[in-house]
Length: 401
Length: 225
Image 1: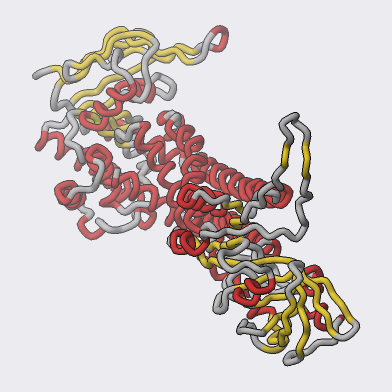
Image 2: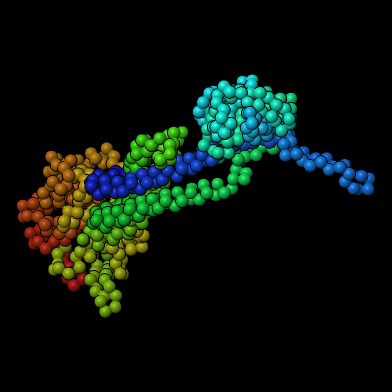
């Protein structure tokens, strides 16, 4: 069928203006497809990074045991202990599991933590805080403290504490000043403000304090183990799979971020569906454009088709010539559109540098290969109707035209 | 001489009912191998319809048609296409060359479409044919740049490309000046003499008919002479 390919190519090059117009039309469709892919994908990435980016993607939380009941031989409950709101459960074997967890593919960072409640006192001022003990060197493993730091250093050494901006302002604290932190367990420690961060989240900035894991052990009377392990992933969408993998490896209750985030997932899904609809319209436009142009070409070339048939060209040969034209238009339009799309997306900031006021377009999500493949398939399918029409041309009538 | 083709009781009717027009009315004809025959008759006598049926481009309403031992009435479209490609050449009044191709590409077409590609052997034969037609210096010319007579000679070369036993020519000189017409006819006569190819030439021109060894006259849908 090399010869059919030659004829198809000759037809396309013989009508340069028409072919250029057709390829341009297809390229515009591919451009829209790629732009929409990058925009919808970038938007989803942006929303996820803003909502989930600073959260743990998979969390292993120590399970708090129910308080024991003392029951009399007659079946009466003799003693009931209410579960304390500040009770701290422990992952006693955390040190054993950490290397296993860190070895799972797709994990970006692991952060063992001790969390609890406390009160910061400075003079007459008192503020309730949520205290999180972090391993020094992994301060920015989950929340990007380094990035949110507005003063001081994130390095958590012995006797140092990091405070949210609002909390520090409320207590009139600055870097280098000292405060007293009393944990819910009643342990008090004198700590120096090592740094102040601002995430933009009022709940975090106004009531969160970070200390080192060793300070937290003292504050919450937890000589060994941790209260939870937070895990950050390279791909937030892999949370379910990786959580299952960790559960099977360690037997611990690893919970992905998607548990309890159904509304967000539904919103992202709806957005993705919108993208599919828009991309489908772009493809339909391509198919209609190619089909109508080739139908016109078929009509214009009826006498030639008649001559070919008279010279012994089979119907299959004629079909192949026109289908090949469609495929070639798809290839040329697809590659041109993909190249234009890539060039047009280049000036937009990368996914890691989205800024307020700019379109959150992700150039890596342009679906270039998919766009080209779907365009070639679409253009080829679009050419079948004109090709079949061409193959049905009656040579006697066509030659007589 | 051996019969190349034989048609008997050929009937062709166009349309149905009140508008039905019977163009061929039981026409019978035998062509021998190596004949150079002219097909004469007034307009509307059925000459073009007969050539179209002989060229397997159209099926008759009824009748029998055999060529080289093949029953061409019973054959399907695929068989007829392959048969036409191998055994029958066409020369039309308006040359009917492919406009976006060179003279050589047009000549090579019947072989290339059969083989699926343009082989060096096919191109060599195409060049030979064009040289025989006196077009050695026009081989790579786009057909649009050729004169009417040159185009018709390219068309003759194309008709001969696959070495057919029969060439059907419908008014091949009807669109040419007398000098070009004679040139084309001399070529046809030469090929007939040298290669034994059978030619059936439809014409209104008595001079052209006189160059043929046999004259077949069609009138009112039958052979009258």
